[in-house]
Length: 129
Image (tube, rainbow, N blue to C red; front, side, top):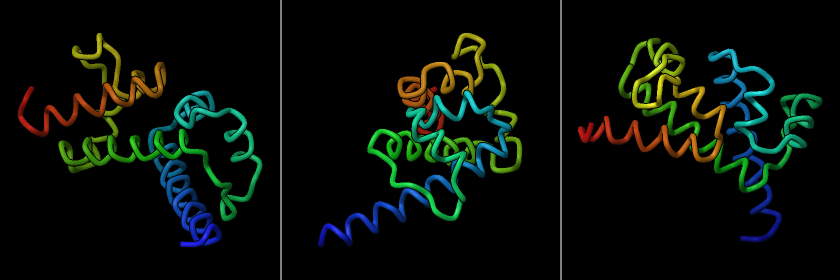
């Protein structure tokens, strides 16, 4: 694969992830501050809000990893709650998160919070909780 092909594939993946992120952000009513924390790079967020959404920028590895993890979390919650209740679950306080919702855990501690929520959900899906 040539460098040009790799960059094109990465740009396509970035656009798809960002499109899904903005859709999820709208569904959950994420604030700008929460979006910045989740993406993990304020300079990228500033760029995102200033550009036409049909021409997304190339994301760095950290932002891609965070958005892939967030996508997996959404999928896991939808597996547990197939109807629209998944949004309520994402926002509901849980004892296992010291009274915080999965969204708050992610928003307060983006990378570690995402991993914590993802592991928790996988344990539920696998019957370990």
